[in-house]
Image (cartoon, rainbow, N blue to C red):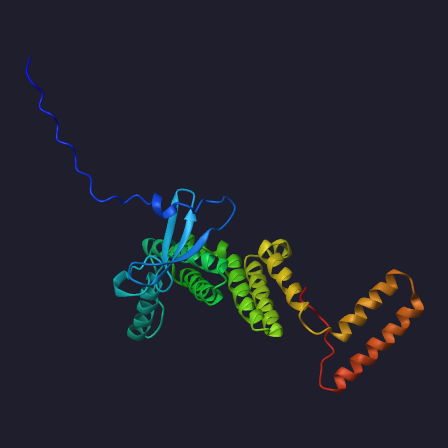
Length: 278
C-alpha cells in the first residue's frame, strides 16, 4: 500500500474580517445607524451601518476618496470641461454629455446621498447643505446637457427630496442660531422650488400631497412657534372663531380692529399682507 503525500495547507494572510469592527454595533432596521470614527490616516471618517456590513466615507471631497481625472469629482471634471468648451467655442452650444458620462454622475451622486443623509443624522448641517447643493448641480447639468432624453429626466424624480433636505439643513443651521425669521425664509424658498418642479412637469395638483412639502410645512410650523405673535394673525384667528361660534357682534368688532391695524400698517410703510405659508 503506497503512502499518500499530504497536500500542502494553503497559508492564509492577515485576517480582513470586519466582524471585529461591527462587534457591538448591531444593525437596526428602520433606523439610520451612523457614527464618526478616526481613520488610520488620522482624519475623521463616516461609517453607515448596513445589514451586511458598513459604508465608510470621507467627510470632504468625494466620499470614496477617489479623484477622477485628477478632479475632486466627476461633477467638478465635467463642469470644468464645460467652462473650457465655452471659452474655446464662444458658447455652450454643442456641449453634451453621453450616456456613460451621465451614468458616472448618477453613481457618484448616490455616494453623496449616503453622506448627506449620514451627516443629517449627526446634525452636521453645513455638510448636508454642501452635498445637497452639489447633487442639485448634477441634476441641472444632466437636464441641460445630456445627449439622451432618458438621461435628462431620470434623476429629476429626486429633485423634490434633495431640495427638501437642502432647505431643512439651511433652516436647521439658522434655527440653532435663533434666527427664526431667516429659518422660515429658507423653508419658504424650498417650498417655492418644489412647487416650480411640479409646475414644470404639469403636476401642480401633486404639490400639496408631496411628502417633502408636508415635512417642510411641519418644520415651518415649529419655527413659527418661536416667532413673536403676529397681532394681525391673532386677530384673524379670533375672527374665525367668532364666525364659527356665530358671535356676530364680536366678529364685527374684530373686523374693525383688523381694518384699523391694516391702515396703521400701511401708514407705517407696510403692505398689509397677512398671507402665511402654512
